[in-house]
Image (cartoon, rainbow, N blue to C red; front, side):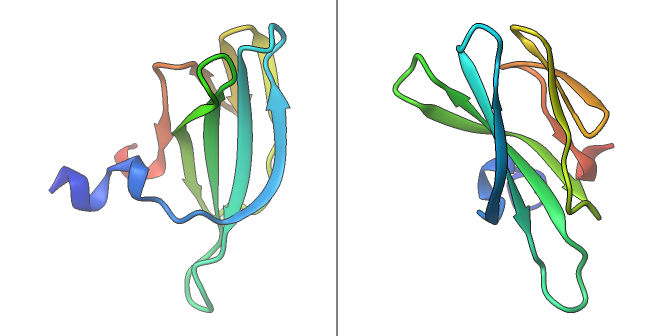
Length: 98
């Protein structure tokens, strides 16, 4: 059940919007907007890139009814995406689990 409804590795790719790199250059958050079609609102997907680990990636942000994004790094390991504070790489925000 988790795999079918909550697994963030199965999210749609979306169209690239922007990216921001952590102050120490260790991480980059890339953001994509997805269009679910005529009856489904836009959603934002945030992907964490591990710059020092061969650019390995991990989805850390998925929020529904958003089509714009504001990303702010508060320190080397803390990013705020549209008001949601995440301590990377362990935290993630998934509207389906809130």
